Amino acid sequence: MDFSGIFTSVRHAARELALVSDDVKNKVLCSVADAIAERKDEILSANAADLERMDSRSPLYDRLKLTEIRLDDIASDMRHVADLPSPLGRILMERTLPNGLRLRRVSVPFGVIGMIYEARPNVSFDVFSLCFKSGNACLLKGGKDADCSNRAIVALIHDVLKDNDINPDVVSLMPATHEATAALLSAVGYVDLCIPRGGKSLISFVRDTAKVPVIETGAGVVNTYFDEFGDVEMGKKIINNAKTRRVSVCNALDCLIVHESRLNDLRALCEPLAGSNVVIYADEKAYAALTDGYPTELLRHASADSFGTEFMDYAMAVKTVSSLDEALSHIATYGSGHSECIITADEERAKEFQTRVDAACVYWNAPTSFTDGAQFGLGAEIGISTQKLGPRGPMGLEEITTYKWLIDGCGQIRE
Image (cartoon, rainbow, N blue to C red; front, side, top):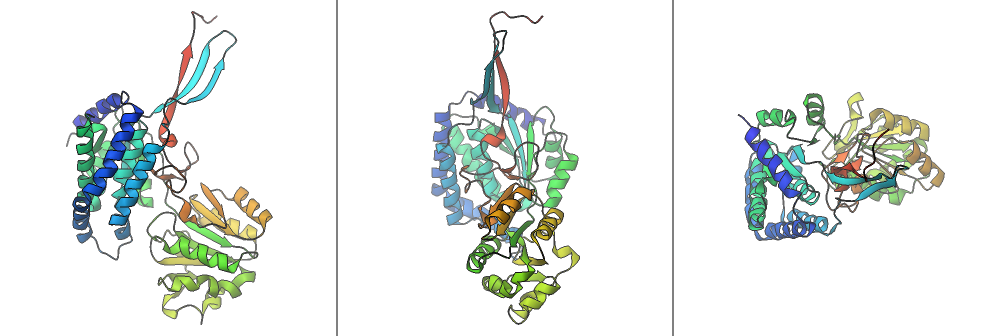
């Protein structure tokens, strides 16, 4: 299939979007939020069709599922994006050279952003809101598991855009095929930036295959270290929230690291997890500490593969360490650079942990479940970048803009 027609239309729509005022963009975003409430049954019906085709035991099932509450949250996030200041036209740097030339570095859109994602229909709304607000057109390439949901969502957005006399091609949904993925990754001259959002295999494929620029939103292998000076009651709440709030998301806890001097507290720390039937893969010391305290049917011996695994399920590894240095070494070996946490009452240890851990988000006495664009006040997120070149952490409006230099002169010439 030839996708050049789609790419050309989206490229043209991006140029038209540059002429749309921020007030009009905000009005459209609020109208889409209203339409989500008005057409909730339509979206949920399409989502139900997708859910019927997926095994409810799959870790992706929860990511795929939309509910009335989740749709309300999506609409709220969209209104929040509308309320945020425009990221465009900001003067990032300004100076006048000795020869009188005036230089300004000003924020501008990338142009066309391609988004490749799996069973996450909420991403269709989030990407549209952030791209539209920041003046970017977007090419959406969702997975086949969420195709019915994505088509219903994009149809709703297109209706609102048409009602406001805006070219609906500012957001275009590509077919849920491998052929479309290959075309998008090769769309040099049409796509300015591609962002993959999904599991490790998808991200690796995009990084290794793309001919267009890519920002990686890496997989989340998340650790929490319970230090020898950690508070048990605080730890129980943080660990339980990080693990069980939503197990399918990338900020969910995968490995609890515990100082060996606190093994007697491990049962108490893990007690709330049993209520959610969390399977624990424990090393030898942790296994012994949990025996006769954690449900036998939920306790397993850890293997070499237990550490460094993004479970996306009601499962978690436990690693015993003898020092902060050993905890940091474990994180450096098995972490993915997404989110890491320390639970401790010792401020010096906390500061050392935050300084030495190499990750996009590093927490002290708070769960990694807060790694989220909306929670960070960004309105929504287009993804969580784990790379170091360019954006890092939750990506909102500012992270999907670039800049250009404006140079004002009065006839100067270069010697």
